[in-house]
Image (cartoon, rainbow, N blue to C red; front, side):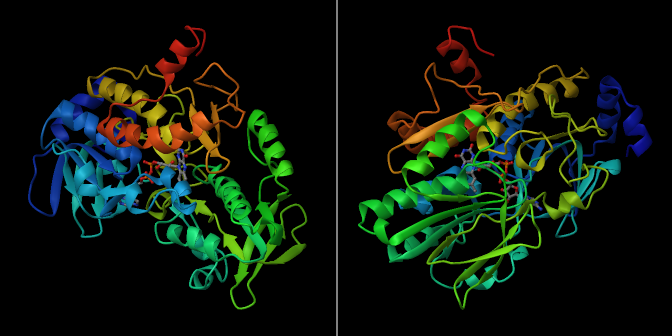
Length: 442
Ligand code: FAD
């Protein structure tokens, strides 16, 4: 085993040699070793495992994930609007993980980076030469008082979980009159556009089903803005104004009272001020955090609990044999599957270099994207970098609502995800963007 001090002193070249010596062959059910262990078999983990198991060969890569199903989560916005089903959005994990990788169908309960191992909930010790952490982000519905009970009642729903996403369309169909309320929590979240996408879809549904006159649509967000990037925020303000949607900034959902069907919000600028609103429909985006198992390992995380990686190389700041990808990292970009695609190319090149004893060279530009669906046939395709600058693929104004972008989101992106990204073949639209801009783009 390599000591903590040893890891810190290793150069990339020395790391390779020492770790190779440290590597053991598979040694029984409770103690296994792999060249590469990937924790989490979601978007980032699956792509990483596909690439490296094909490169390193059978038995060299393990993916640890307890989930039966792998979901294409971006589709849940459309499931909530009744355009797709939950079943359309998922495939058995056994079908999406690469055949050459070993799937350890357990939950990781602790990390031991000083000794290059992780522990599963069955007490197995899994040793690694290299580790990729791809745990995603944790949903914390229970942090809102009364919400778990409220989910048992009609009209309370959330596109963020496979447990509640089916209720969204049911809630829309049963809506008769009153307030339809949509929330955005006071924490970082994945896909920061999703809390309002379902609101626009709902508005159009109510309008086309003769219920809009009796509906008051309210958006309560903890943020001081409607969207973090000004170009798209300006376009969204136009949409909410044209559609008569009320936007309440700096308001954080803290309690739901299912008996009286009331939602209580705290004013984040005046914490003693609370606002209570009756709802007929309530769509909740939950508070989120780094997964507990990661937060509990102080050596791996930053002050907020996210995996502490170099934002350009994705290599861990203290353990050079550890990399991170996706929502669980502290890379300061918007947490999306599109960002995972952009990070994936950088990760596989840099991890390959480290495995060869070289220094990581590839740099992540912070690319992320959010297809802001604004109804049943329109979408604003927001694409930007980690400094908040638009980084658009197409040579047209992407802040405009467009039918083409909607079809891309609904009909093209799912195939790109299942066939391209999960097989380690899609690294985001960088080269398409360059071609579209005749080479004059980053
Ligand atoms: P995930 O894909 O979430 O995978 C994490 C994996 O870790 C899971 O398989 C989980 O089972 C596993 N895991 C968790 N804990 C453990 C443990 N202790 N041990 C082992 N395994 C564990 N992105 C877009 O690009 N565009 C969109 O339009 C979009 N819309 C969205 C709409 C909604 C409603 C939602 C919910 C998400 C949306 N996203 C969108 C975000 C996107 O889905 C995520 O950013 C992306 O899936 C992150 O990938 P990841 O690999 O980091 O995590």
